Image (tube, rainbow, N blue to C red; front, side):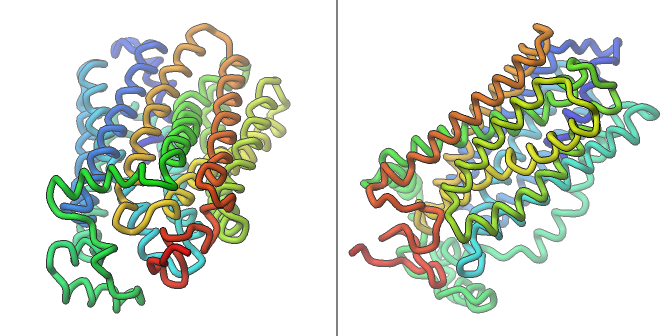
Length: 424
């Protein structure tokens, strides 16, 4: 919800003459948000193995709710941008931690589906943000919409503190052996072993990062980063600028904002379809195909279509666009072992945030130039780049198999039950 609020109220911010927003300023501030997410993902993805999943989730939620409150109180664009940066720190930290938790606790042979199920909540929040923008923005102003971003700190944090389990591997690394075994037993996980526990101290953090370039991953890691860059450029560029691009293409303001609701509805369907498909055929294969289909959808939107057809194209593009990126995360979870998974996901999400920084800025530059068709072409090119990068991951790993397929990664992660398997 917090990520998508900005795009949902963008037309109202631009129409608020006293606030001093322009399309170029809006694009720059959108990039501040994603720059904060970059820092949050890199920092939290590495620190969570040391501090624990639960405290980092709690801190992340508090941070992005605080940032939303700062935006609601902002007297001008600079203060507003600072609020979006603070929100980005929390949002960037939350994503890789959530993905790592799901990967660790997912049932056997359902890791990709579990990842997709978790990410449907992202799009439910996006739809809520769009609904709030449509319902509250015109009559109550954009500030009220940002006040709703404080709700997670009041609702989610108490639930996280009470119910969210800590990683057995992290508990073991802290010497809390009985607690680690109790959590593993409660959630039907194998008892944690020292190999699954992250290393302690600064040396452990350095070793976790260095392991991302171990033999068999040396080329896969930068390719995952590149795929994540392309995917997040699409996700945040489209989420921020789709209403304005559609308005520049000749659609009305209300229809243009509704397109954001429709593409997120497609995103929910896409997560469910992609997760089940990836568990059967492999996350890499599904991600690559979904990226290609996203490029096709973006090219179709270059034409000014009749409104019902435009809604249909936006919906199916949402089915492909968002889940293409999430399947990059699903593949990442299989490339790295339990002790490095949170670090690997943090760096894939964090380095990928450079795409999230570029996307809103690039969209703002295109809209300022008055060429909506070029915007859709740019997003289509990013989708092709993502398809090429993720397709090369199995090839550079040397075994030619899809790392998103259960059992396809010798010596890293195997099923049943996510145990470490010996190399053969």
